[in-house]
Length: 396
Image (cartoon, rainbow, N blue to C red; front, side, top):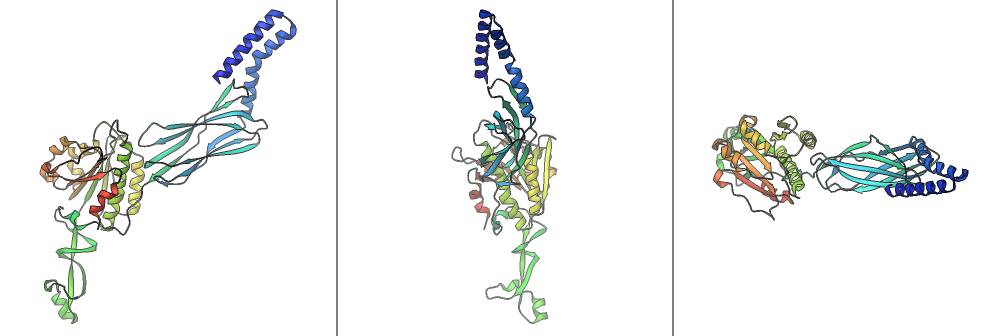
C-alpha cells in the first residue's frame, strides 16, 4: 500500500505539472480527476465492505497435544463487485503464555462468493488456546485506500494430555513412607490385620494365622481372612505453574507438570484415594483448589487449571503452603515444580517435611539431579521430555 501511494503521489505531481504547463480545459480536468480518484475508490470500497463478512468457523471441542486440525477462515461476499485484496490477521493466544501468535492471510474476494481458507494446526502445548480474528483490511484495486473491519469471531480450543492406562496400579513401595491411616483400599489386599479385605476359601500355601477359625467352625470349611491395604486419609497435590524465565523449555515444563498430574490422579482414583489439587491463583492472590473424587472431577480440575496464569517471579504455590500449613492437613503432600528453592523447604519443620514428596520436573540433559536427602524430603526426578518414564517406578 505504501508503494502504491508513492506512485499515486508521483502521478499527481506529474499531472499538476502538465496541467499548469498547458493550462487547458482537458489538462485541468485530468488533474482534478486524479485528485478525486482516492475519494471515488474509497466510496466504492466502503460500499463493497458492507457486503463482506469474515469469520472463523468453530473447531473441535477438544484436541490431544500434537494432534492436528483444520483451522478454517470463511470470507463471504454478498455484493456484485469483487475486492482486489483482503488482509486478515489470525491470532492464537495460549492462556498460560500471554502474547498471541499472529499470522497474516491475504486473498482476493470474489463477487457473490463464499471462500473457505483452511490451515493445518497442530498445538504442541497443553492448555486453552483462543483462536480469534484481529484486524481485517480491505484494499481497492489500486491499493491506495483501505477500510478496516473488526470482526468479533473466536473459539476456544482445550488441548488435552494423554491419560495413564486405566489398568495401571500404584506400586506398594510408594506408600511405605506414609504414616498410619484409617482408610483402606477397596481394590488391593495388604498386611493390615485391623481391617478385612475379603474372605475366601483356604488355598495351599496360605498361612495358618490367616485362617478365620470361628467362621471355619461355623461353615465347616477352611476360610481365610485377607488383610486390607491401608491408604492415607488425605493426599494433596501442589502444582507450581512457574515458567523458568529465559528458558526455551519452559512450555515443556508446564506440559510435564500437567501430564504428571494426569498420571498420578487416575492412579490414586484406582485405589479409591480422594485427593485435592492446589495451585496459585494470580488474579485472587491465593491458593485455588479442586477436590477430585472421580474422573469427572479431574476433567473439571483441568478446565480450571487451563484458565489459570503462569508466572516467572516467585514460587507462589510453595510459599503459600509454607505460610499456612493448615491448607493441607494431609498424610501425604506431593509438590510438582520445575525449580528448586531451598529457602521455603528449610522453613518447614520435620513434621511437615516427612509427608512431603517433591516431583522435580526438568530437562536433565542440561542439569544435575538434585539431592534433598539432608532435608529429609523424598525427591522424584521427572524428565520434562518423558515424564511418564520417570513415573514407571510408581506403577506395578
